Amino acid sequence: MGEPERGALPVVIATWGPNLKANAAAWEVLSKGGYALDAVEAGVRIPEADPLDTSVGYGGFPDRDGNVTLDACIMDEKGMAGSVSFLQHIMHPISVARLVMEKTPHVMLVGDGALKFALEQGFKKENLLTDVAKKAWEEWKVESKYKPIINVERHDTIGMVAIDTQSRIAGACTTSGAAFKMNGRVGDSPIIGAGMFVDNEVGGAASTGLGEMVLRTLGSFLVVEEMRRGAHPQKAVETAVKRIIRKYPKQCEEAQVGFIAVDKKGRHGGYAIQKGFNYVLYQRGKNEVFEAGYKLIPGK
Picture 1 (tube, rainbow, N blue to C red):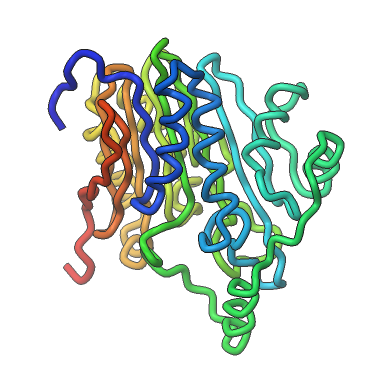
Picture 2 (tube, rainbow, N blue to C red; picture 1 turned 60 degrees about the vertical axis):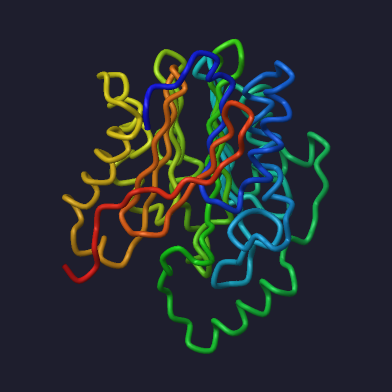
């Protein structure tokens, strides 16, 4: 994690190795001198439309009542933000969140109100429950046991932060939430400061994993504030993870939370509670997967 050479911008970072394609879509915007906000929106729309991604958008596993409910947020270099939560039937919640930011006086719209707004803006109502997700839900109903599984297939919520050639920072986060959650449950992903936070003076951060743990600590905001105090992004994400473990040691034995971060210099970091979290970084023309460090060793 050494100091980056000159020309380290633009840069885009995202949670989870399978999101190389999402990073590539963001880089396509950035490499042409494009806007960081356009880049993160374009990037996270990739998994939102992927029926094989069971934790984001179309194909996401439903709640325990069989409903696919989506959460997303987006934030620009000016500190403006938009968010949607408990949104159903719309494939690209991140794009709805951006319009909440740009076309309303609000930050967050939820449920039926978010759906009504999306339809008014021209989005199409669609069935997001795929056959694969429906089958998984029906199998789950046999025992109806709710227990989030760490690092399922090594992907989860996508959080993304980008810095463009003009040093503008933007972030995005989107998810279908915890599989088989209670109807109405909202995690950290649509909450500014929890699932994602950026500050153009400092840098940005995003989270993944069990949202309740991040909500209780406003983890992404904490990471950015640590960088503001001069911490390297790697040290900043380590601080956030260690705080969660210190406050909730017992719960952390069976939970995963991971953070990514990038600062204005283009330096980056990633860290998690448990082994198995990785992230993708596109910088200096290379789109690479990094294995994140971790703190907790189960059973010790």
